[in-house]
Image 1 (tube, helix red, strand yellow):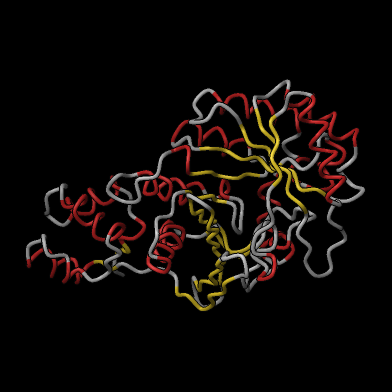
Image 2: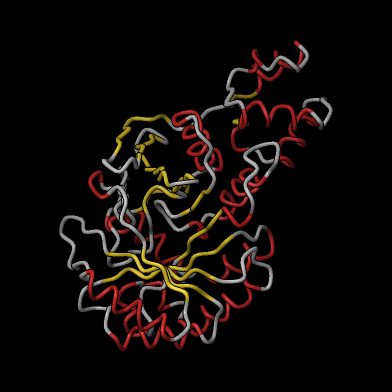
Length: 354
């Protein structure tokens, strides 16, 4: 089987060339061709010797997921459905804004965590994505939109910290000046609170961190984010403070989906303010994005405004996320892709909770 160089970070690509009897500096050249020029044909990599190009054609490839769906929302948000194998497809979303463009990337085919308010979590889990499949979303988006992607958020399908062996090389490619050259502050990994993964990310490739909090107490979070039963709030907040020791930003972003009558009361807002006294953070309030057969409803605009006001009066930084792309099911919590095997969740979830 040919090596898919799309998923090789600098160290892996240098090792590949050494094994091929080539100089390690070839890695820089090929990375620029693949990631900056979007080139998949070795024959067109003109600064490589002909013999090297022929050797690469025989032993390697540049292969991204296949686009099988491409939808644009009224607000300019663009969603791709990407086939990653014969059975599974994942989704990636580009969100254009004044002065920047953000790509939301998936890390798994489905998700094992079963958060109560998330469409992705309702559809099952099949497998982790490879590094090439993760980076391939960025590679394809660069070519499709022909404009600079200034930010990448790993907030698509899946829990990134349950797939770190593949996510970490992808992050290193995003940061590498010979690839995408993003700063650590502009690459964000979102987690529901996988504490061992948070500690590993902190030590190996600290980027901006967003934690899906969604509740200020263990009792409520157990219901909304079942992972809390393994990693309760006290332990999660301690892990956040450890992460801050090496984080590129001096705060953790706590994501908080606003669910009418569930977690949007004044009391919950005051409890969140107390958490902010323990961890340097900002809150990102997310109006719930409905999906079929959901048990929840979105908090009203006035309730969200009042909730934010309580936090702000306590001296806490808070933003309210503008809902983007909900007319094409591209908003937060709506990504669903196409996952073939829903039975694997039970096995994977058992491993997470063990």
